[in-house]
Length: 189
Image (tube, rainbow, N blue to C red):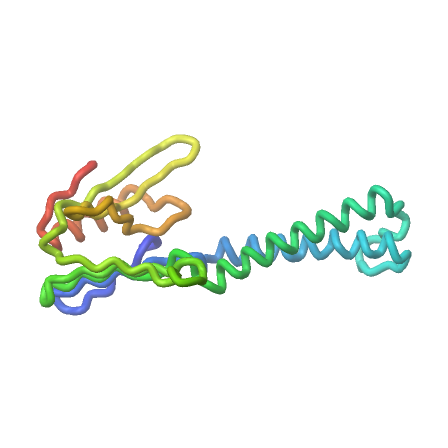
């Protein structure tokens, strides 16, 4: 499954791995932005120093003000964006797991966040406090398909990854499997 991988560990433990920011699409865009912004920065520097720093074109013909300056600024902005993208991948934001253990009667939701004192996001609760598994489906320009856990005394806890929506079939299968395991109703379908 693309949203989470269920790892069976006996009949009383359900462990779901949640994919964070270490996805192919994030590596792809970080690489593209890095290469493009490096090209812009080198074109701006070539225009300023009148030395060709690029292999494919000769930006020394550009007038530094305003063309070379603007290309250099685009390059710096792009490199800052690519640095952010690479750090998000390095930190694996949103990655973690969902663990439901009927032997101990506990559930644990774990995710990685931004560095700092709240880097580790952990939610522990008794399984008996789980009221239902809720499916949220929103179609349109910005589609959203997600599973939530409704727990007594808490806001709904998201279980699926953020990003591209998972298929309806996968959402239904995962929701039904979890609701059956926890012996709670499945809402929203």
